[in-house]
Amino acid sequence: MPGRNKGKFGNDQVSELTAGRLSVYLRCLNALDDEGTKTVSSKALAEQFHLNAAQIRKDLAYFGEFGVRGVGYYVKELKRHLRQILGLDRTVRVGIFGAGNLGMALADYPGFRREGFVIVGLFDAAKAKVGQQSRGGVRIFDVADFKKMVKKEPIDIAVVAVPAAAAQSVVDEVVSCGVRAVLNFSPGTLKVPAGVRVKNMDLTVSMESLSFFLARGDADGRA
Amino acid sequence: MPGRNKGKFGNDQVSELTAGRLSVYLRCLNALDDEGTKTVSSKALAEQFHLNAAQIRKDLAYFGEFGVRGVGYYVKELKRHLRQILGLDRTVRVGIFGAGNLGMALADYPGFRREGFVIVGLFDAAKAKVGQQSRGGVRIFDVADFKKMVKKEPIDIAVVAVPAAAAQSVVDEVVSCGVRAVLNFSPGTLKVPAGVRVKNMDLTVSMESLSFFLARGDADGRA
DNA sequence: TTTTGTGAACTAGTTCACAGCT
DNA sequence: AGCTGTGAACTAGTTCACAAAA
Image 1 (cartoon, rainbow over the protein chains, first blue to last red):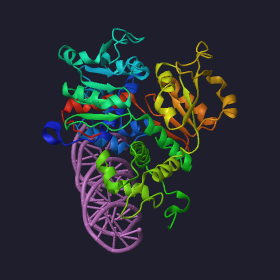
Image 2: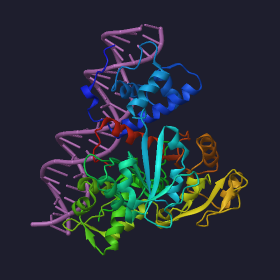
Image 3: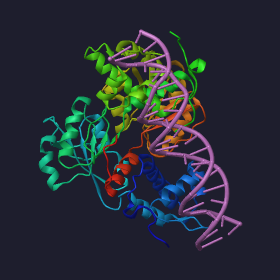
Image 4: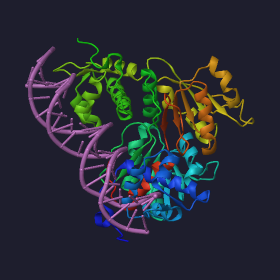
């Protein structure tokens, strides 16, 4: 076992695309593990989940030599590695900004809890909402108290679900409190300093891009 | 005016990335128009919204010669062209599948209405929900009635917000009813026949990819 | 034999840089 | 002068194909 093979401390700049695929691989492995599969080859994984075998191998090989030639990958072991690579071996703490329809729905989204994300709370500027809680029991705090709260209840990822006009100021605030990752549901681009990651979930852009393909009639079974 | 310059009927396979950017350009032009700006150069547009000038020109030039050398683009005119290219000059009809927290929140999302999307209704399998409506007044129908309804109330885009286990069967159903565009919020990959577009909004993948960058500490101000 | 890990080849996407129009 | 539209150069991402390991 030659062990670590790339980039010493694992730094070489991994693309967004690769990061997303690692998460997809983990989901596939969870499914295989649940059905009791012990080992899986990149080819089998690729065929079952419509991926490319070489790409799976390359993505994984980037982080170490996890496979066994002639055999494939041990499902449980690879799962463990992926969880560690994705930072899911420790608790990831999430704050949701904006306790409107979308923010409340996200707070109760069962998928978050599943992989060990902890929803610390909802944060809103409307005094009337503060003190209430979501159907699932996530409490709503005053966004003005966030600065104080974050010291005792640190947050790893801020989910932004406020109206477009408020998004930039909310992000400026959370970034100034040390948050370095943002999942943004508001339309438009957020400006953040280097060292902060933003992932945009732009509903309008997605819908309009589907509309575009419908309009030109060259839709194609691409995901 | 040499008119149409590329690919006869405008077919040459435009990438997902380009389609998304067209939507972003439209949003930028709306903002400029609202503040009364009459013309804008690709350079000014790029600087103001942190895009690349050459890319804007290339994306637009693909669909025609909309610019005027020495001047730039007429904001209103380019807006009109983009709305037409994105298929927003006609009504885009949307059905939302799954009347849970997320589906209900999406049904009332103000951004959808703004660019002319019409929410035809929510569709759910739970009889208890059928006949109810969202806070914003979107009615909930029985998903079993969709096949009949779609004949009188056709749907262009299906938004899938059902639990993971139900997602594939819902998509099979809507595709068999002629829907050719799907915005999927459920985790995992959907299988659809060629000719159907799927756009995935995978919350878990987004969160885990943020977690990944936090874990390796090489976050970077990339959107 | 099977299947990994990986250089090499290829494909897609972005940016540069400039001829040519206004 | 200013700015578009676009070929050429470059960069990023994917897939191929095979030597080496089990």
